[in-house]
Image (spheres, rainbow, N blue to C red):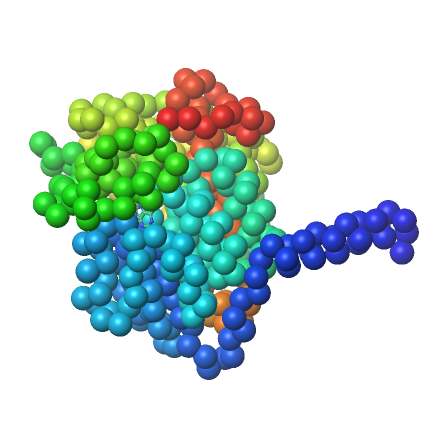
Length: 404
Ligand SMILES: NC(=O)c1ccc[n+]([C@@H]2O[C@H](COP(=O)([O-])OP(=O)(O)OC[C@H]3O[C@@H](n4cnc5c(N)ncnc54)[C@H](O)[C@@H]3O)[C@@H](O)[C@H]2O)c1
């Protein structure tokens, strides 16, 4: 061993010890043991995930934490024996919880991520991994140090389309890829705001742990509209880049093995949804990547004609990806005259089952913190550019102070 490698080894060993001290060891599960799951934040998406995890063999749902009593009652009506809490820390204190699913609003993700790992539990956290870049840095480091199994709710990372796209690119059928176009279009009935949810009559200060929802945001009187419609406000949300673009960016970055963007520029505004929202409903983003690749993402809430999709454009071929449809490949006759049109054949994996299997095997799931991080960085670069009204580089974005 050279001095340099010995120093590195000693440093790593010291870090390993520090990490082991900082993160309690997880319960060791045998292949036939039940995985005991807790959930934090069981609103719309949390209820989907509750159904998904109950469908995985050998899982027992033992506890849930949600700040709103209505959500706790709903969970108990589905799983009578479940323990409920209005503070996620009480759930994390439970020794009989092995793994935790987080589906809270974006501004709470990092807190729930870090607390879950610090409690020695494995984690499934909804996308976008974090609300800001500094939080993303902390969560990635914690995921690495803790040795816990972390899956981000980027379910298209478990798609057969991703397996096929990677294979076709690896096999050289695309030639040099310089551009990717992606889009997400949705429409909204006249007079109804996209994403706007009505506030249930029982959503009162008595029934909500309001300070837990605020999670360090400036204190103020209970505001049920913001609790239910957190997506509309920068303080709690990352707008449509965090809600939808992140899925497509993660998929594109994985398919092409791209690192974080080097620069981003986002334009748009609140053009169609003239209500109290702060986050834009109309968006055009351009990302520069190393390796000579430009990726664009365009989105509207007032026309759904073109649906949702990605097109990877290469000198030798084109891949078109529509979510929930077979992947398509066409050769570019200019450079690949003998090539054939191909449809993707690989089946999707169940993203939740993939996580539970990794909790047992200690393997790496399909959407680990690392792709959660890279896709979160793209989201935050786009939003920072929009809010600063200028092109932003990765370095500038990392140095910027997130605000709302
Ligand atoms: N992967 C996907 O396809 C997908 C789809 C939809 C939503 N999501 C993500 O899921 C997350 C939740 O979205 P949603 O539509 O379910 O929101 P929601 O408002 O319906 O649900 C959030 C729940 O968290 C609770 N909550 C708020 N603060 C909390 C706290 N500090 N501790 C515990 N509980 C708290 C709320 O009471 C609510 O029940 C978001 O990050 C969203 O982006 C992912």
